[in-house]
Amino acid sequence: MECSGAISRPSSAAPLLVLATVAVALTVLVSTCVADPEPVQDFCVAVPRAGDAPAYPGFPCKPASTVVSDDFFFAGLAVPGNTDNRFGFNATLGNVEFFRGVNTLGLSVNRGDFAPGGINALHSHPRATELVHVIVGRVLVGFVSTSGKLYSKELQEGESFVFPRGMIHFQYNAGNVPARVMTAFNSQLPGVLTTAPALFGSDPEIPDEVLAKSFQVDAGIIKLLKSKFKK
Ligand SMILES: *[C@@H]1O[C@H](CO)[C@@H](O)[C@H](O)[C@H]1NC(C)=O
Image (cartoon, rainbow, N blue to C red; front, side, top):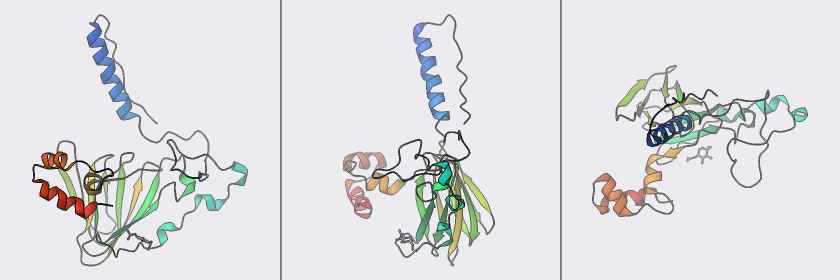
């Protein structure tokens, strides 16, 4: 992992300026050093931990002497996901929780199946940039940058698009036949924050007045949205 962040050294500046500089430098360091760490060995096939989800930076390694070819093999993406749900979409995950061989290797892969008109609804990945590659169909994709600009494209079979880390994005089957994509991530566990459920289906709930004020609408609209996303 490359961690950029050259810290300039003010020589005769006032203490406040020094503090401010350190604060800015720390912010830069933190914001540029959150990618998966570099591996320190050939591989580290993940051993599932009992109980809780894995803690950063990952899972413990299976003893190297017991590692076999199948630990680097994953057939999970060969099986279509069932898109018979309200979004007409299904993501099949190939992150470290399912594909143990990618542990510590800084990447993972998913499959996305879309019914006609199906959507992989607005979401973001806090820990990974994502590349989407269309295998079958026509897929409208896009992300919004921090300056509020939408970058979007309708992809045909064989075409790719990239969503920079953390940007809110979507994929929508613009065709009238099923579509299929493969997505690659530069993290073994990209994490996903799905926008609408995060805002309207959190537990506990975000207070109605906070959402109403944030979205500049009446509380009734917030209640309606919450009814759609309550767990
Ligand atoms: C996705 O597909 C799998 C495999 O068919 C199925 O078990 C799962 O319930 C589906 N998920 C959704 C959200 O429809």
